[in-house]
Length: 275
Ligand SMILES: Nc1ncnc2c1ncn2[C@@H]1O[C@H](COP(=O)(O)OP(=O)(O)OP(=O)(O)O)[C@@H](O)[C@H]1O
Image 1: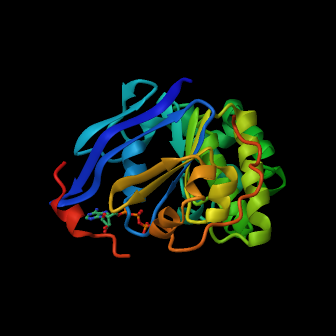
Image 2: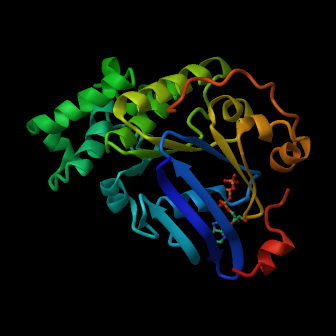
């Protein structure tokens, strides 16, 4: 199987604090990977390293074989990887059309005012309509992001990343704040949208073990900045000690897998780990 993303023996330190120690993982073509772990385990740091926002202190992160350490979001998107923008929270007054338009104009390398481009630039307007259609947001295009339901806001956030036409997408708790009844329909829409849009791999950071169990091909569990486990859900959720270490709860009932693409965190060992 082709490897899309690979992290090899990645360490990341903040001063003398080792947030990540010897983290290795890979994402193959067609895979849906969940990164889990207790608060402070290093999930955000890992995501920032995997998406080129942070340069690892040592080790290597490669996307399709090319080093992406610290390259930043614009270059990352150019190479085919994107993550949710969180524009919805930053600019709640922008309409859905404008939010998607900002992302699309970034992909199409428009240099002028992206909101003006929306009116004048047919290619951007078409890209916006296409993504809105895939994410069921067409009827919301002219409404401000703040008027959307929580589930729609989450979809818009992911849709903005889609507007960059990535091969690999990274999503952060795609259903947080969404009602239990709606979270599966959002996940299913999202996975279906990935398939339609040609996304080859998904990485999600997720605390909700029900979603992790149902949609992941593999689960990478972090604890105190190290990989505690990298397992398929059927193995992961059979190990009570592992689950307790990660979430401190009993395993969720494993349901049939949905169709897919194919304590205090700062421990003594983290402070003294040699990277
Ligand atoms: N910029 C920083 N400077 C110093 N320490 C940091 C910095 N960012 C994160 N840390 C520390 O690194 C550790 C890992 O943090 P990180 O945010 O990656 O964990 P997390 O698993 O995402 O946590 P959460 O689930 O609470 O978001 C934590 O102890 C945190 O305090």
